[in-house]
Each structure stands twice: as structure tokens, then as C-alpha cells.
Length: 346
Image 1 (cartoon, rainbow, N blue to C red):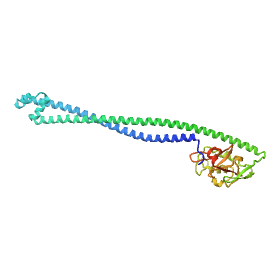
Image 2 (image 1 turned 90 degrees about the vertical axis):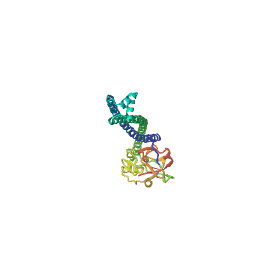
Image 3 (image 1 turned 60 degrees about the vertical axis):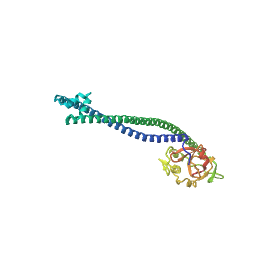
Image 4 (image 1 turned 120 degrees about the vertical axis):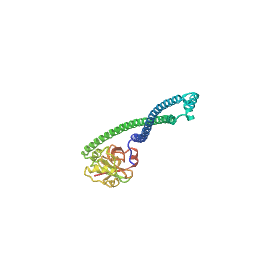
């Protein structure tokens, strides 16, 4: 692979991608936590409504109980006034009203109406007691669930805030590094343009340079005199595409691969080249590294990668997927290790 972008930028981008992936995971978790919180809150509201209804039912039951007690009291008074011996025995033997009611009920001394009222009162009291206890327990349990759901939601929201802060920090750092790298690229481009102008001025003096060539991959030949460069202006076209994204098979503004960039730049000066770094090796004449001039095509990695020399030991290239057209140095690690040779197009 051709050289990657600045290691610091690559590292920061990797961290940012991890932070973004964690943000997505936390966002999914938050959605689930919110759904669970909303569902448990809705259930608590239903329980609270049931409790409210139960309190209403309880109030009705108490009212019915009081009415039943009054009815029984009236019935007992009636029994007393009617001077029924069996009823007097029940009344005189009772220790309290409840005891009297129980005695009356047990002794079957009251009418069918009295028995029905007593049954309803007992039923109301039992239902209210059971229902109230059950709903109170459910309410307490549901309050705990709601609190747990709220705590889980808050914890995830806090983590998302922290992760967003980290991601924003990384993005800011990446933007700063990219801006610095872009500024360096522009500075190198300006220097390349100045060298090109100097070369063009020197060419008017009629002093052609002597060049040592390369005729095969990695095989040095005897010293040969190569014609002077005639397409230095191709550099300006290549530099105009700085920061254009790498696109496999691309050969036009908007996206280039390595050979596509060189082919397009030369097409702007009326020279047709193939869209293949391997085929380009067969064009022009060989040039030794110490005699490179702006516009020469430089080859790497067994002819698998190609760039356009701009002078000062630098060249412009479209490196690989995820990168952009940029200026690189022949002396940097991967390029120095895989350099094959250069060709000058006449």
C-alpha cells in the first residue's frame, strides 16, 4: 500500500471512529431504557388510578357499612320494642355492637333483610382490605421499578454526554491536524510552483542537464544523456487537484487513482498516456533519481504505484482509498523502500 496519511491524524480518526461506534451503541441502549422507563411509568399511573378507584370503592363501602349499622340498630330497636324474648336475650348478652351483630347473625334471630345487609357489609370490608393491600404492594414495587429505570436512563445519558464530549474533542483535534497538514501541502505546492518557474527561466539559457537513466525495473544502466524536460507545466495541473479524494479507477476532477491523476494531468498539456502505472513505464525515457525534474513520472512498489515529480525531492500522488491527492517525499519510509525509477515524457 502507498503511504498513509499522517500517523497522528490516522490515530485520532481511529479513536473518533471508536467513540462514534460507542455513541451509536449507547444511543440504542438509551432508546431501550427510555422505552422501559415510559412503560414502567405508564404502569405506575394505571396502578395509581386503580388505587384512586379503590379508595372511592372503600369510601362507598364505609358508607354502606354505616348505613347497614344504622339499619341493624333500627332493627334491634324494633325487636326490643316488640318484646321478643329471644331477641332480648341476644341484646342483653352482647358486650358491644359488633358482638351483638355477631350474636344476631349466629343466632339467626334477625330477618332475611338483616342477614343480607350483614353479608354485604362483610363482603365490602373484605374486598376493600384485600384490594387495598394488593394495590399498595404493587404501587411500592412499581415505584422501585420506575426509580431503577430512571437511574439507568440517567446513567446512559451521562455516558452519552461524556462520549459526545470526547468525540467533539477528537473531531476538533482532527480538524486542527488536517488544517495544519493542508497548510503544509499548500506551502509545498507554492514552493513547487516557484521551482517550476525557476526551471522554466533556466531553460531559456539553453543549458540541458545530463541524466543517468533506468531502463528496467530496479536495474541501473550506463549514464545516458536524456533530453531536457519539456512538460514541467504538467505539475501545475496536478497540484490544482490537491485534496481531491482517492477513487479507484478515477481519472477526472472529483476523484483520482494514482495513474488516473498522472494521465489526467498530462492530458491537460496534450499528451495521451494509458490509465495504468505498468503501461506508463514503457513511455518516455528513463531518468535517474539524482536528475529528476518537475513533470517526471516516478514509480514505486514494482510499478504498482505512480506519482508526478514536482522537484525538491517531492512528488504529487493519489495514494489510496480514504486519502486525498497530496504531496509526499521520495525519502519517506515506504517510498524510499519501494522506489523503482522514473520516466520523462518528451
